[in-house]
Amino acid sequence: CKKLSSTIQEAPLTSDVAYELADIDWDSLGFALMPTDFMYIMKCSRGQTFSKGELQRYGNIELSPSAGVLNYGQGLFEGLKAYRKQDGNILLFRPEENALRMRMGAERMCMPSPTIEQFVDAVTATVLANKRWVPPPGKGSLYIRPLLMGSGAVLGLAPAPEYTFLIYVSPVGNYFKEGIAPIHLMIDTEVHRATPGGTGGVKTIGNYASVLNAQTAAKAKGFTDVLYLDCVHKKYLEEVSSCNVFVVKGNVISTPSIKGTILPGITRKSIIDVARSQGFQVEERFVAVDELLDADEVFCTGTAVVISPVGSITYHGERISYRNGGIGVVSQQLYSALTRLQMGLTEDKMDWLLEL
Ligand code: COI
Image (tube, rainbow, N blue to C red; front, side):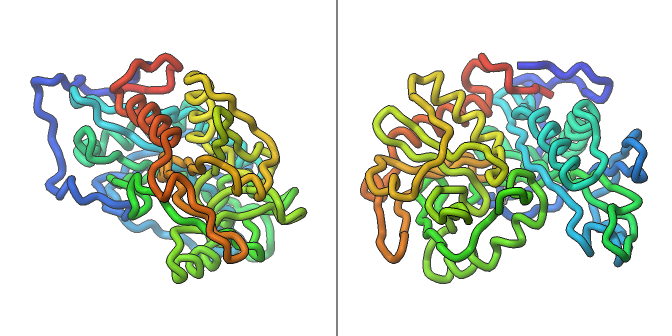
């Protein structure tokens, strides 16, 4: 576990120092926006680099009606979480991975991006400014949402002349209303999330708007969400609207390989390492939809979702159930291993945590 050594750190809290908490019901957090005290903003012009950002009171921002992000979708977002330790200190999970992913995405979307150090410092400053919103241990986490957008005005299609990097936060609980209970997916054979050569592999805002229709239709039929197939063969698993997917068969855990159409999830990457360290064989490869038929378990991973066991998948009207709709043993084991690590309850052997 890395220790923060920047000047913005305040005196560390210890178990005998009570920490301040916002006056909210910490037992009923879901995944909905709860406005907090501060947000972080940093701007730069096209062709320049980001240099200095600042914390501001959380609130609405002003944008030109012809901002690049509003007109042409020139925008990226990230998601990461901060957890409260038993001693009151705060842990960030792999923030430099989000910084790296934002830099890769920014290149694809023709935008300047903060350096890794600027990104991590900005996240740290934002979390510390909002620390009374970090839930007590076991009650949830502080979801951190960095945005990068073309905020300058354009009319013709072109990269915006100005960019804004912004971070806001919200305390959250479970993403799906099911919590850790299994979710129910349907495969939409008509709608695809990404195309080869497109932007499926970066966290651009358009990837999420484009699945809302399929997701809404699935929810109306009683499903939790949609599992998408590749658009070329219509045969290989890609991912769910907001998370990656894993298929378990015996001791082998398979997940679609990162090949441009799959979002390189940080929880995905972490679970691969955690599973390998626990003796599972993990394969990153093309996973055919037929493999769902004789899988033992299926689960999803994501920052917001963490690990969500899948109770059933419906494909061409046929429902495939797993573990009698209960939580799979492998999903449960990996969920416990990951969340205990994120909350600082087990040793951080991989050096994934940054303690504030
Ligand atoms: C996350 O898991 O952090 C995401 O970005 C997915 C989002 C749709 C909530």
